[in-house]
Image (cartoon, rainbow, N blue to C red; front, side, top):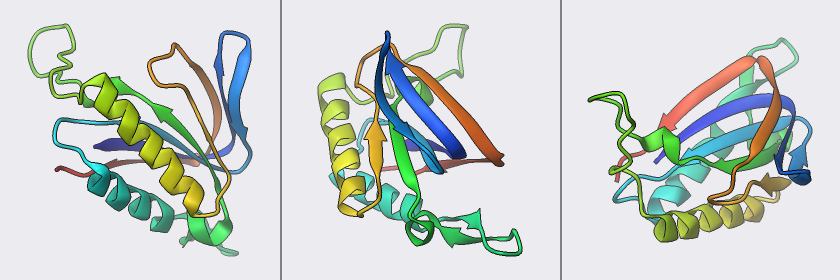
Length: 147
């Protein structure tokens, strides 16, 4: 499982003309699922996301977590994060979890985030989405967990 985590001042996701979700201060999570990922992998990743100290304190140091600052989360499913680019010029999506399983894990991720009490919005699985965001800092991290 791979997540690109971006601290934002605002973000939104749309499909066509319809806004699916929007947040103010918080995190955008671009989420890719790989072969072998499970609900346990998702649970570990959510805990990591909620406790990673990436928000500033009064002095500007990154000492506060999403949970501590009650950051909103906007989760976006993104298969391209787990594509293999080692050979050739075309991405190889064989490492990705099949769509039915990945969709189930994405739903689990969203529900687990919601259980934290933070505001959560999300994109649509297998949809062509437009994601807009204002990266705060910029602060961007790549988190990976291997099953």
